[in-house]
Length: 163
Length: 96
Image (cartoon, rainbow over all chains, first blue to last red; front, side, top):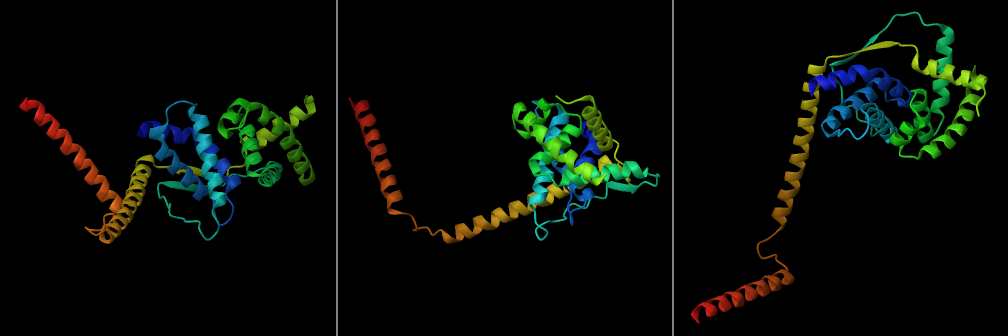
């Protein structure tokens, strides 16, 4: 199990963190949310039956934990998980201003969407097909297609105003 | 139907998302992580069990020996009568 878990973390840590960065709202830091997601994955791994792909399963857990964290108020949020084995090392790499600006505009606009639309657009940006998005969110593929049309319009309008 | 310009825009947005600036590198020491998780789970389980034991003890203390309802007494009496009758029938059958 350790080998599978290690591989799983290496293959998925980047995308988990991308999603955590969108959902983490002060005082919750993305690093804290990331740790909660990893903990949830570790606890649930023995129960993974292979009914879906491991990627789909990881996305589902990540989104569930992120959505649950938003329901916790400032007062009730408990920073119980302070894991020393997960380290976030700052990188000193020059970032292109234009790239940074685009990302900030995109993440800001995504953050304004409601939880359901947020999940859908994140999964779409993660290059998942509508069928996979439907499997994760519990909506039908047709419903996803309809929602995507609206979400894309909202997002494009928002981003156009920002850039 | 999305035209090619819109498709390009969305592809660019996907690239922006997937190639978002990395401000930090994530290092995970898995063996240590699993040990940390196990200690977190153990403490949670201990707390849960202690809480359950405390609840049970409180309930046991409240329950008195003669604090049995009339319904329960009647039910038990009825069951005993049924069993007694059955045993009598069995004994009588053997006597024949």
